[in-house]
Image 1 (cartoon, rainbow, N blue to C red):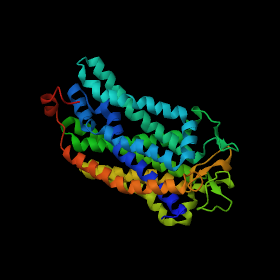
Image 2 (cartoon, one colour):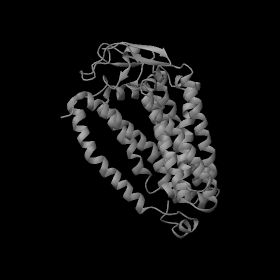
Image 3 (cartoon, rainbow, N blue to C red):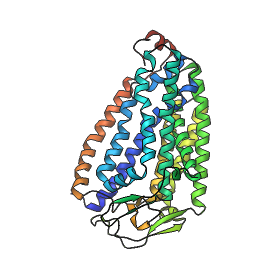
Image 4 (cartoon, rainbow, N blue to C red):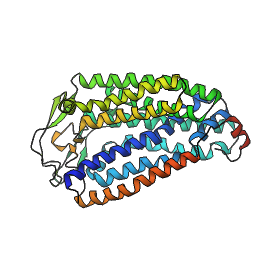
Amino acid sequence: MLDYETLKIIWWLLVGVLLLGFAVMDGHDMGVGTLLPFVGKNDVERRVVINTVGPHWDGNQVWFITAGCAIFAAWPLVYATAFSGFYWAMLVVLWALFFRPVGFDYRSKVADPRWRSAWDWGLFVGGSVPALIFGVAFVHLLQGVPFHFEDNLMPVYTGTFWGLLNPFALLAGVVSLSMLTFHGANYLTIRTEGDVQSRARTAALIFGTVMLVAFAAAGVWVSSGMPGYVITSVVDPGALPNPLDKTVEIQAGAWLGNFARHPLLWAVPGAGFAGGLPALLFAWVKKPVLAFVGSAVAELGVIGTAGVAMFPFIMPSSSDPRSSLTVWDSVSSHLTLEVMFWAALIFTPIVITYTGWAYKMMAGKVTNAYIESNDHSAY
């Protein structure tokens, strides 16, 4: 039997893996949707773009659903607080995502150009808006979320949707949107040819550059004294969770504390550049598979940087720092974490294996000729 403290850390890592899996797998689908109206200049070319992700986008979205379920089961207080605090942001994401299943399935069933154009822009919204909002909401955790717990541990959110849209959060939204669009452009370059491939390659060079510049700017912003959170009381990592049983202070530069104590952790933000820069180079020299791998590594670095900087915090509170949720005090019971751990240990390799097999079966170029010869069966 694994001890409670170890399970808490394991589930922090596993939730991170699920978020990364969502960014890599569903992220390139969103990037493709974002690029759809721009890399496809006519109906056939846009159907080429759609069919690169049409057969598997819904399978990739399982990573998103699984991550949400894992947060609900492993970190119930985080789930309850986040879904009330970010309610309107999540509704915007949900409304945008509605365009994806309907757009993929019905876009090409009516020959009217106005119908198809409307759904092309709907798929653009379904890809770009969630990518932007995810970055804005996720990095808002670094700034602290205005909530507090009442004595009965009822979370009370005191912020607004518009409060999310501050300059640093918008910068993070640019990082997120450009990162996923860069990844999607690299994927399109693998799966297409001709003019569509050429436009996708150009998009990869543009959005990869934007991602690296914005990520560097965000790093400078944080390192220039941005306030962070520090636990100032003694915490027993193996104790039963109680988010009010600690003291927390806000200190300038606190988010750099883990990097100062463990210099090897600088490899995590380094991966953002070590993946992104080679990915740009590979896109330039027309090595799309290597560019796709590089942009996936960059996603690991970008997402991992926020997680490592905040550890052990998951959802800090700006209005009542003591209410901040951490890895130690926002989790489910020992038994729940252990049962989930063994379930994840068994099923995660099965999911990854099946996903790899599915992509192998659907590998190859999607061409104009394929669309024209499969006009009634292709997306």
